[in-house]
Image 1: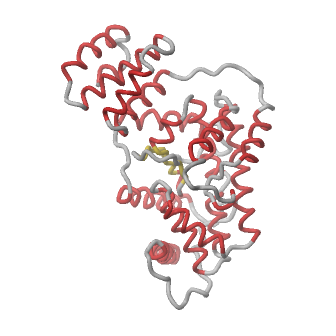
Image 2: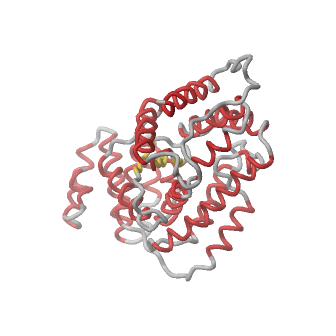
Length: 349
């Protein structure tokens, strides 16, 4: 099948681009990319899209640690589907998953596969902030940005097209200097049209994502708030590059633009679900060293509402279990179960 033949060739080239060797003497030739769809998706069948997404997801399992925790997966799937139902194409299949990585990242792949790093979930300080990231990635899928990117790549020379694909693969692994280096090499050879193409897609995903947030009863103002937090968390990380060189540019101009758009929505209070708080506590115990997790929970033990204090106690209990101190965790969990017997996470700890 011509589609599969070209796809395999493309993936091989993308892999070569991640190696410390030049692509070869044919680097100046143009690359024939698979004809996988225009902006409306008419050139790629739903079956082909599903097959490509499934292959993408299988490959990710070989490249990174995908969380298999049923409670974590159920929460993210539920949140993601709630948002997807309010998108422009609610019939579009989506698959949400958590990457067990402390780095701050989220990405959309073919077939509606959307990954969120545990580090990003822990950085969020409200459920609407996490929802804003998912809504943004959902918008990339519904607006066909991935396929538009392939079309743009088809007009590039081999080093540029392959470099962009390699950057996407490395970016899904968690970012870092490898992804930035690949993107730099690719974009250095790209045209001004291709630079603004990426910018416009990000802006559109922000705009459409805010609409999804509002329709799903999450706070659109959480998007610029979370962008600002991400900017602050990475300002000393050596990523002071022009905004068009980053996969998800977090800049002063983008924050200002999203804040201006958010003000157009009515203001009201948005409460976090209890399960959001519980899942974040659980992820902290799974991805942070026990002594650091315990220090965090002890520091916030007496803060917040009664529910928030119970969630903190739950996090302490999980940390004690992970530290082989289950006898100390048992009375804490017993008290939580008595307080909230219907909470399955307390029963399953």
